Image (cartoon, rainbow, N blue to C red; front, side, top):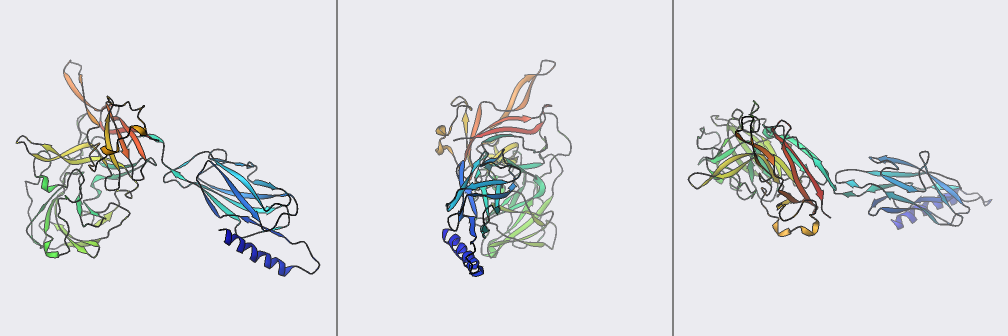
Length: 471
């Protein structure tokens, strides 16, 4: 940057010299910012303006400025101070540079764009303003210190998945029924099914997508069915219901897909949930092949003798690219893989059966952490640490695991009570005897506690939580 500055001033001086008359008229000085941009890494930063030669007399420079998502006096201040929409920077005689001070009063949190552009508009001495007449002062991004949030999952039928980025406080709500399959963006070729709608997938022996298939009454969720027909609840991408997509087409079988259930259309009894009580979403059949580094998807209704086909392209910025079989197109669901940490949703987990085995089961009010993007979590009981007293020094990194259910349904439970007739009742509530440590993909560590799971009327699907960064 220094070489560029000198080169620019040299050209300008040559031009001025060429235009000067032989009567030894006073040559104009040249003034410019020493850099065209600066990223604020400290609270106070000097901003340097240079002259091509020592100033012949004292004077001042007048700077204009343009603000992006900041305000003077609130987000930053300068010395000298801004007045009347301008910054006047005085300088002495016989100096080669002058500085003003920029003080950052508020940080920018991750995802925000905050800056100020200063431009030299005039000088009180005979001077030429060079090409480096402006500088952009960028507020560095930093993680949010904390917040209190209320993800809008949509009440007791929980029609939405909500993805939360703790570092910015941003929440992204997406209808659960907007997608059916997710195509992994990693080096492996893996496909997940929609774990929020009680979906299951079963491999057939056929490689002919146009062969008629039938509904299968054994493809169940809610205490029956087979765990081989759902994706690994812990989130292990090597354990999907649909086998790894082979480079050899003949090894890729047709799958029958039970598309699961829609959210309920009638509000359930207060305290109950209706995440999967709506009408069936029907049945499909799919066969997935490779297409270079992408996926070729063949799909149809199970009784159809023709099919549709679509190419799904991997996108390394995301964990998955999502496809709606019903809408026949790719859709936006998750934020970029490094831009969310936890999600609120209903979820296909497993539960024990009377025979001693395990079976798929739909859990409402479930929380996942973004293991594929690098987010990790673990639980802390208040018998070990009080939430307010818990600091970064108390974090036990060995407790972070690759299980996306480390918050899961553990954050909520039921509380006992009695009705107007004295009969015992139970209600849904956030547990106050625990909180969670969450590390985001950028390495920021937070403590998170859930403060409610119901609204004032006792209806489920209204979670709230608060969190604070650990430093």
